Image: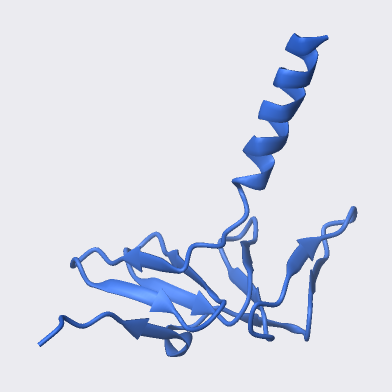
Length: 103
């Protein structure tokens, strides 16, 4: 019974960790880029970082879709439709901030 629970829990953690909720990412050039308050930062295949105001998901075509609402949730229903709190939008560099050194 313990093995079944541990295996089920590990399987669940795999899918929970699949969600994209990172607040900061490092670009290919070494800049640290963060999402603004409660958003998500995702590194693209080209090494750029784009951000959403809320949570984001990556579609099977590589598009990054996020909630329009700060800290808003995103889910995919059983027929593959993306649903977002406050509506959905594509992630953008405009929703990111670049970290700066303390002077």
